[in-house]
Image (cartoon, rainbow, N blue to C red; front, top):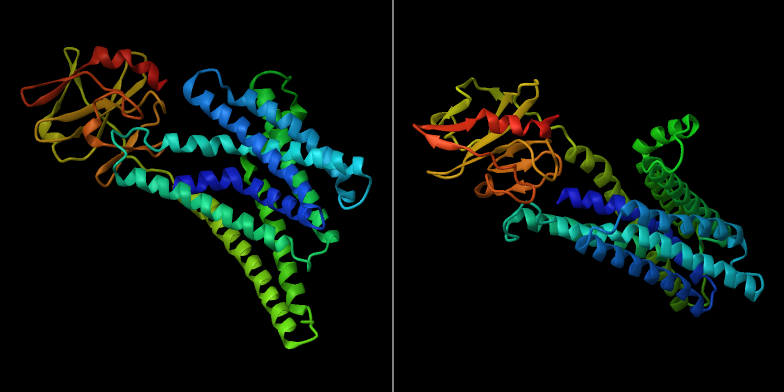
Length: 416
């Protein structure tokens, strides 16, 4: 559950905040039809994201790096264009404002197309390594995913409503929006540079590599800046609403003004509460989720006549047992054994075809992949598929599990 709270929040919060503020600016004194530019942009981006997600799931054609380049390059151009025209969003000729809103369309299309594919593809990860979806682990993942979407929707709606308040003048809103566009644009430039370097499309200049290597581990900082900007706007709203006099010619009008002020304060409080929850998720929650798993060192058993024998009495306690075999070149080939029932044992490499040699550990009565936190059904260990350990050929003779060293030698490539 926690992993998908973190993933969805990291993936989407920055875009939700920027699009909510942009929409609030478009609503300020603009004819209704001009709001549709943002809507059309989001629809175009959603269509592109859906097409990519379908291709990713059904073919080997879709490559995320090339897709991102096609999305982010136009988005950066639109960001620059919008920043140059933003200051006259409420004034200027009809042609001038058409160009401005065209940039809005392109920018929102790019933002949506970049963020949405992951949200569409996450649900397909829920059942990885499971033989059925009718279990608590699958349910927790669904709950985490949906809860994150709900919180983001509430934060976005509240931020839009708070930023639309007449207590926040355009002279304050526009600079904040410009900063948000700049922050996202800088992140997009960094992402493009990472893709180009990773694909060897540009030389690895030292002046480029050094700042990029410093920025990449700190990419979450871009989201924190956007969260801080949103919080500052809400604090300003609180101050201005609290200090504003309740005007009205009669008690009914003053009651209406008081109700409007309370409503604005509620929207601001919702934004701050949602941002606080998101901050806890991506800091404390992520720290907890990424905590190092302490594993006992695997046991090295002696081999005789090209065979390793594990006495059944040593692995009959229902716990996961980890072993290692030193191959001819010194590579440590790890393997695991767990008792599945009275007559069956799960025997496999401490590696899988999906996550490589990251390994497994036991959490209560579950076996979990260290890398992706996917929970294995113990009854399926020893069978191929998903994130299950690679099955290890063995036999049970004379009260022991017998594994031939030649089989382990053949698998040493997985652990190099």
